[in-house]
Length: 426
Image (cartoon, rainbow, N blue to C red; front, side, top):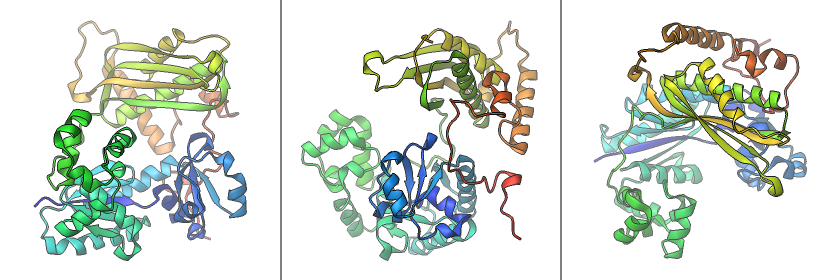
């Protein structure tokens, strides 16, 4: 029998902050989105105060002050490194795993005896918390979707001790009956409404629904969800995830920006970051989409436009990508328009090994690749953007913040990735 486990880090961003600041334990804590706009992570204490996911921080000011809520900007360097540590710990305990997201990993437990699984899962939860400081919940089921369902109960029911196994047919059916259909992995908001109108309110209802109707409305993914809920595995473990379809970088500005120089600096920075992501994942892009938009609240003069730039051959070279992004942006820039958001999206991705050389390529790609490796190595060892590009306003931004810079007014130190921000014991 197939048996999957999902290890889900509890309130991950908040838990990362608590690892290095124990005074936060038991205190309501929230972590904000880019530009400190909305709550994207909440401790259980903050949830109990009624702070909703995505709640704009400006609507919470009185509540935050009244209840002494600790507020943090997102610290992606810290969270990424802590996620890596959790993954390393899991890999030492179970050989077959798939990193699903920054705070979730699937494990294949099919090789373990059923009688040993509960103890193994408790060991996993205890070891991860002991080695990293991050509390986790573990859900077990005969399919990935059921493991997701089980994890929900592991989180919500303290009596389970952070581990829930629904491989037993009785617990399997009870769990489905207690799970709203709209909360099932892969259903989504649009299909949730469709199911509700047809009286399909629980995951159990969905598992027993008319297959032809689900196939007609939700396609093959809908019937796969039904099978997964019934205990038939359709989604194997992906130890080597498929190549990404795209890599994007975008930011929403605190205020609208109409200065062309600042907009070009911002876009250069995003293109540079997109190139870094490509190289980190061993990918190259064949095309790039650049998009720009004004504030949606300016309904009388809302502006949105995109432009596509095609590279002569697939690339992950920062200067080439920055140049292409700026050329594309020049075709969609509109004067006297306060832009609220800019972004780049890399498309037509291939693995580095699949790169094809052009017969008449004017660029020395071997030399360019070596240069990018050197730049990446320096930025990894000495801090991101130690080496950057003038088009991104790097020199000037070190003297004074730019209007397009993402706001992180409540950011904690990068405890694990910056030598100058290590905790000191005195």
